[in-house]
Length: 298
Image (cartoon, rainbow, N blue to C red; front, side, top):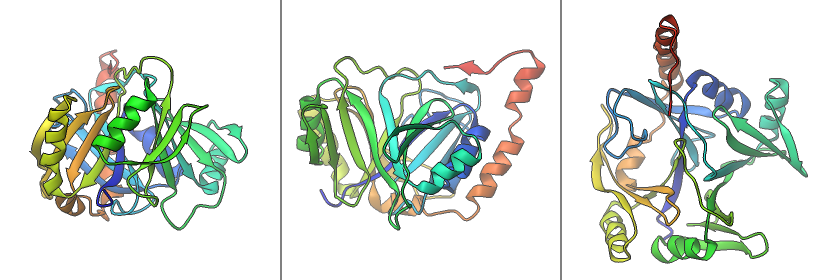
C-alpha cells in the first residue's frame, strides 16, 4: 500500500481569527489554500451542517509531501463540544516552542524536550523542542480506541497500514502506510470512545481505481460506510472522488482519489490573502452581538 498516503486531519473551529493566529504565529505553519462554500458538503466535510462554511488548509509545506490541518469553519457555530476521541497531534519544532513562549500562549512541559499546548477549541498539540527537520515536522496523529487489537486488524488487514511499533504495556500501536509519512497512533483508553460535536476526520489518498475496492471490502466485512463513492466539486478547481468510512470506534476516515486531489491541493499563493479577506468580511459575531445573542454551541 505504498501508493497510499496520509493527507490531513479535519478540525472544526469556532473562532477562526484566533485559530489562524495559533497555526500561523505559534506553530509557524503556512496557509496553503482557502475556499469558501455557500452550502454544506455532500460528504459532510464541514460536519452535519447545511449553511455557509469555509475550508482552510494549513501546514509546513505543500500537501503533496506534508501532513496538514484542514480547518472547517461553519459561520453560525461558535464552539463545539470535545469528546475523548482526539488525543493529539505531535510535531517537531523548537521554533514553535519559542513562538508560544514569546506570545504567552499557554504551554506545559510534559516530558524531556516535550511540551503540550492547545489550539482554540481545546485540540491538543505536542511540540518536540528540537530543530525543525527538513522533511515534514508533523510526526503523528493520536486517536483513542476501545479495543486495540480490533483497531489494528481494521487498519492493517482491511486498509493496508503496517504496524511500525506496538507497546503492549501502554496499549499503544504506531501505524502508517510508509516510514516517511505522518503516522497514526492508536491508544486503547479502556472504555468507550466519545466523539461529541467536535469530532474530526482523518484523510488519506490512494489511486482512484482503489476507491471501489475499499468500499467493496468494507461492505463485505460489514463495516460502516458513511458516504459511498461520490464526486465533490470545488468552484474553479478539480473535482475529486471520495469514500468516507468509520472505523470500529466511529473515527471518520476519508479516502480520496490521489490523481485529482494533487490538482485540487496545489498551493494557492493567494491563500493567506483569501483567508484574511474572509475573516475581515465575516460580520457574524457583530450580527449576533447586536441582537444580544450568541452563536450556536454545537
